[in-house]
Amino acid sequence: MEKRCGCWGVLTRTVSGVCKSSVSRDSPNTIPRTSLVYDSATETRYLNASNRDLCTLNEAELASDNANPSQSDNTKSSKLLQFSFHELKAATGNFRPDSILGEGGFGFVFKGWIEENGTAPAKPGSGITVAVKSLKLDGLQGHREWVAEVAFLGQLHHPNLVKLIGYCNEDDQRLLVYEFMSRGSLENHLFRRTIPLPWSNRIKIALGAAKGLAFLHSGPVPVIYRDFKTSNILLDSDYNAKLSDFGFAKAGPQGDKTHVSTRVIGTYGYAAPEYVMTGHLTSKNDVYSFGVVLLEIVTGRRSMDKKRPSGEQNLVTWARPYLADKRKLYQIVDPRLEFNYSIKGVQKVSQLACSCLSRDPKLRPTMDEVVKILTPLQDLNDLAILTSHCRSSSQGRRKKKPEGLTYTQSFRASPLNTGKQHVR
Image 1 (cartoon, helix red, strand yellow):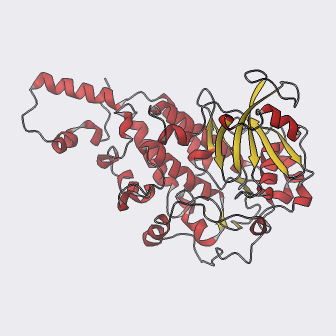
Image 2 (spheres, rainbow, N blue to C red):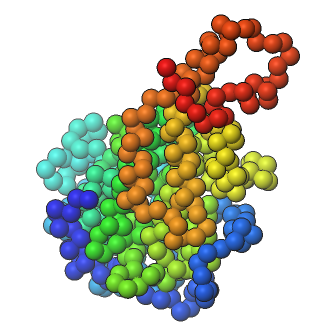
């Protein structure tokens, strides 16, 4: 991992207030347990929960979980630019509606332009394109998360973390200025675009996101992202993935500590069940979330989807029985891919997802191990559609397809169900 910038040391010295671990004694989510391993019945109760944020955030609730603002408001990085509200207002065209890139609990994100060497606004289409996040005064995410965002992204630098260019802290205005990610979020590409995201791009994005998490987990002050999901994975013009939105990030356990006890925050469908049940935070919680995103990448389904039948609303519950069975595995692959995916790649990714989603956190891989598994999958060319064509041609030369063959019979005879490769 790249640490040449010395950002981990800076984070240790200057951001300890923001990410200092503390036990929230008043938290109703901190339930004493002798083990973090849970059974399938407990998991089902958790996974059937509604698709909403794990808790409603406000300033008072964040007091025991994040920094004291007085310790962190003056924390500045020499690499961050300090903008005035007037400059950002001009850079975004007075925050015009047609420049909105997205919206979250924090508020709106606007597209803008600034000069290359400074904070001055530039004409649209010139200078540097940026994304400006504006904090709503009555939003779900408060000032303390804004501080955490500045603290973490202001000090941690990696190719797979979105770059924070600067901020505005003027009167009651809180804004953040990021590099512009031209292809938006992974969520949009998987679930909202008409054209399906190619398999090769899905692997590239999964690997990039894994590298980002591995970097966060590997430092002397490990950082737990705590809100890993498709909407927080942004893509540049070349489909390079970068993690964004560090408002929920928190320093992980150090020394001989096994976990950090904290209030439970995140998003249902992504948060690890043992974290939701106990409030015990470890890097393996991020690994579980990564497993959920891998399932979304393979299946093209959302982690939670109330529009589907009752047994299919939660992705983990629905997909888990298929992951260990090669004969059933291909039934859950995103149908929009139309067999344009690597057979071995789907197998490996599914096995990895299964490991990441292990009910015992100790059995989940580290993100460094995840990176090692995903790296060689970029070069696979055993496309299912090629195997299917080869099989069909071979059968056609031997004999005609018998009349009355049902779809089920045809599917069972397919090499896609055997897990074997027939590449010629």
